[in-house]
Amino acid sequence: MSQPGPKRTFRLMVIVLAATTVCIMAVIGAVVFLNRPLTAAEVAATLAALPSPTPLATLTPTPVPTLPGVTEGLLVCQRRAGEAMSDRQMVGAVNLSDDHLLLFKWASIGERVASLDDALAGVILAFDVALDVWEDGCAVFDRVRVEAYDRMGEQQIHRLTAEAAMDDILQWHAGGLSDTELIARIRVTLVEP
Image (cartoon, rainbow, N blue to C red; front, side, top):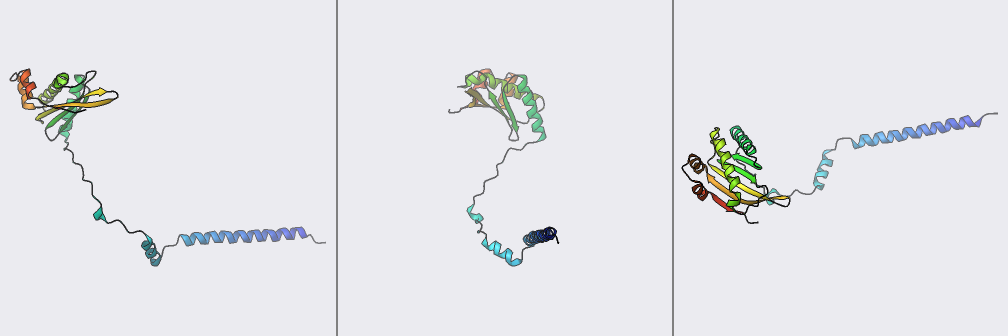
């Protein structure tokens, strides 16, 4: 008697192998088809189906911002001014730019700034810093501006700006101007809340 089981198992294995081979060949064929380079006609058809671009004439270009120039010398002098502020325990920041302006952003601690009288101590300290930097070889600015800030809740609020010519500060330092005369020459701008 013959054994029908092994023949059937063999046939089933051949069918499974044949089906697997056909599936693998179909996957390989699909991958090759999808990775083939496009013909010129296909590229043209794809480009024609894309939406037309917006004309550039309707776009308004944003102007490029310009900043005052910065040189190594200005950065060294700015660092010296920052160190001099720290020596006086002033809270704030300092900037020295090539437009001949030494700018202090000074934060009043604890005191409200409503007038020059309220900010005068900080303004005079900033003028002292300007004198130190000037005498240290950084005579590259002709104006000193102090922006005074005070605290309202968690925010620092810009209250006023005081600006003086460096010539006036030098005369005051040399005794050529009294305190009252210097204060009279300070240009003060109050910032509306």
